[in-house]
Amino acid sequence: MTPMVLLASAIAGIVLMLVLIIRFKLHPILTLLIVSMFVALFAGMSAAKIVPAIEAGMGKTLGHIAIIIALGAMIGKIVEISGGAQVLARDLIARFGDRRVPLALTLAGFLIGIPVFFEVGVIMVMPLLYGVSNVTRRSLMVFALPMCAAMLTVHSFLPPHPGPAAAAAQIGANMGRILAFGVPITLLVCGAGALIAQRMTRREFTYAPDIRSAISGCEGETFKAEPESSIHALPLAEPPGFWLIVGLILLPIVLIMLGTMLSIFLPSGSSYAGTAHLIGSPITALLLDTLLAGYTLGLRRGWSFEQVSTVIGSAVPGVAMVILIAGCGGVFGNILVESGIGHVISDMLRTTGLPVLALAFILSMILRAVQGSTTVALVTTAGILGPMISEMHASPNQLALLALAMGGGRTIGVSCERRRVLDLHKTVRN
Image (cartoon, rainbow, N blue to C red; front, side):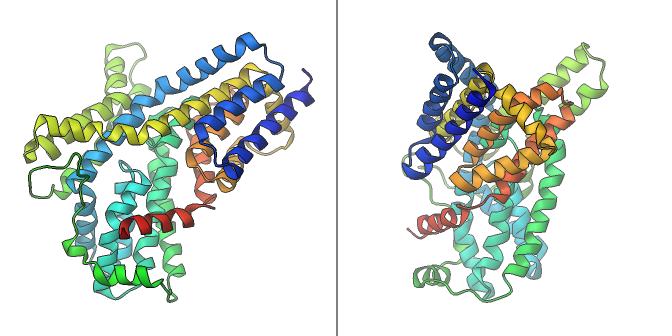
């Protein structure tokens, strides 16, 4: 196939993906599989090679991230059910004082956002925000905006969230380096978000009657997370300690970053380097944290082994679809490579003269803005740029920064977040 035909097949595939998702509301898993097969056939791939390429792309991606995403979701579920998110928010508000409540909630959003998905985090803390707004007689937006912005930022930048983890797997970025660069960058972005939110909330906002009644009817001090009836016939216990929750959230990050740092300084091939690699592996770090969370937040607080296992198991269905979406993104990326489209796209993008960091940022931003899904935007961006990145022979630090650039573009492309937050408001009220 000529380069023009290959390029046309890639463009047609992306257009088809957007039409299927935006116009027909087709599920991203089916969309990515259909688009992958369409592009493969359009690009002239042998029919006998298409299915093996799909299987290889799925296996390569899921082999790296499936366990990581699942373990991260398990930690988040234990923290959620134990009431850890509310403990974090309340203690930080008490420590920062009444005048700095938005800053306290920004930090709480950062910490809660690491183990907990955005939607779950908002549902857990929104009644608390209603109560704070009612007690202080200040606008709900003053508290909700910086906290939600912080959680969205973490969701975009840091593993083990599905989008960043999938993008890292597709371009071969080391998660320890992503965290080493990403944590300070994320903190800076969250701080900037808090300052911007402060300026945006200076004026008064008019609320719909149902939201106004929810604010006046909620007291943050009396709020407790309502457990799901199927799994939460759990014994009453004292809320977990503030520093315990902080430690459980930060432990895997510290282990992964420590393993990465030690692997740089220890002699390659030595037993010490191997041990550091094992302990600092995201799988090992998250597994240890899951077991520790199950003990400290579950068994030690009166849960039975069966109840702990049930709570942990309940986290998996919620992320199964996300894991498969990430795998289908790997399929799309592998089809681009195997069909030769990736090489053509690499050559074309080089002619733009833009740095690859800027390309990653812009492409992720556009895809996020037009179709709405974080994970789809990141895995599609990684799939399109993957061949170009592999030809660059980028250093580990450069790969980590590229993964963060994709996350940054997704953070800017927030076309659907207003509807998303409004839907979550309805969920909380109901």
